[in-house]
Image 1 (cartoon, rainbow, N blue to C red):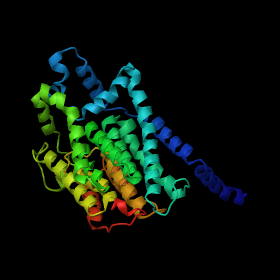
Image 2 (image 1 turned 30 degrees about the vertical axis):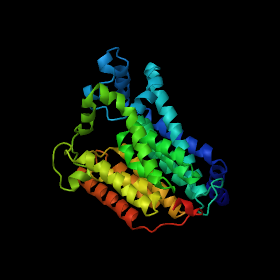
Image 3 (image 1 turned 90 degrees about the vertical axis):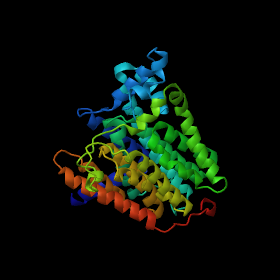
Amino acid sequence: MERDLRSGPAIGRRLALGHPWTTIAAVSALVLLVQIPLPHATAWHFFEDAVDLLFSGDPGGALSLYGDRPDLQFGPLSIVVAIPFTLLGSLGSWSAMVVFSALGVGVVWMLRRALGLLDTGRSWEKWHMTDLLAAALFVVVWGDVAVRTAHIDDAITLAAAAAGVLAVAHRRPGWVVIALAVAAAAKPWGLIFAPLAAALPDRRLLRVTAVVVLAGLTWLPFIIAEPATLDASSFEIANETSSSLRALGITSPTTPAWVRPAQLIGGFGLAAVLVWKGRWTAALMAGVAFRLLIDPAANRYYTVGLVLGLLVFELHRRPRRFPWFALVAAVVLEFGQYPWFPPALSGWLRLIVTVAVLLVAVTAGRRATGDRRLL
């Protein structure tokens, strides 16, 4: 009897490892189901509003939507993606949650495929329990953007960043540019990933420039129709007590004017330096960490971007080892936003985590890959 009890977990492990994608899909579905009786798709109304404004019938209102609604803090591409879902009416948010939950599983596939191509001493076809646990960690925190908030803009940006990593691993410069341009067109802060286009040799500056230009072109009709569209970048939100910005001593009640430009320039600059030094797998986590470090908000759905960046870095640096840093970051950033957690302490822990990520990113040595052309 005792032997049978002990064999239970072993059988479970064999089943999970024998059918890893079924297991990951099941975890993703469970995250969706658990959220049903809880608040979900809390940000979906922003996308419904944007689509309504775009098709309002007012020639001036359609392209001036960002000037009229500066709280719509996502790119034109996100509105385009939202259109087919909004056509489904009340089923739109549910459809979006299902589709973008599935996209999270797709991100896991892209990351795993990329790691296999980077010659990290592992086969992407063969799974280990640490791989499965890392994938489960990601799809759980992915639920914040796909289900709890339905922030499809962030989901598109992060999925496109993962596609960019895969394109780098495949040594497909054209696809790298397209993926990173999509990331920035879906959400302005996605520009911090643009330096990843320089991870491959030759025409590095041209590719980074192409990412910026292509993303900018999606905004051009709106800027021409309503120059005030540019003012949307200065939209203010509350400087939360639980933010690391507060922990840094910035007590302004709302977003300081310098924060958004600093996030973009600092995140972009850090990523560029890391790519230039041959440590491109640290670029994603560094860019996101800098953004979170000085962000006045401390939203839970911010967590998944940092976790994605940490997984790229940790699983590339330490194959077959569990990504403990990603787990710690997820726990601190997630639980720190629950009502029972002291807000000031949450801000300090958030500060410690983001600074630690930045220190690791800038001090870690370059890990050799099987293809020196990436360096």
